Image (cartoon, rainbow, N blue to C red; front, side, top):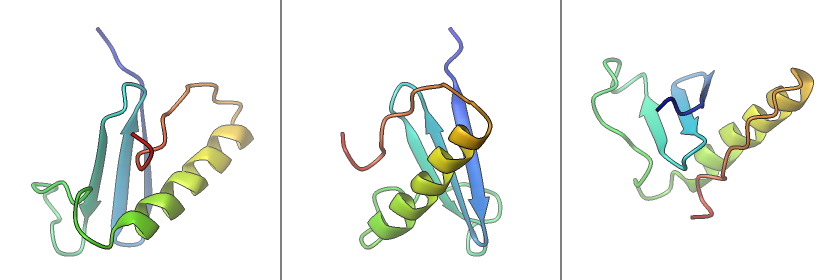
Length: 74
């Protein structure tokens, strides 16, 4: 089954959020091959929150109605 995923990249950070609640955060500067999901790293909550807020803004601008759960609220 296909699960909707949305991705945002800002500077060194890339955030993937899927409709089923999965979340991936990559530091493209230190991990350009995206081998290590940094979602659970200490101190990354602000980065995740900022990226997710911007992703939601983009969804509104594009009339994208895919419901994405907040990565920090589950």
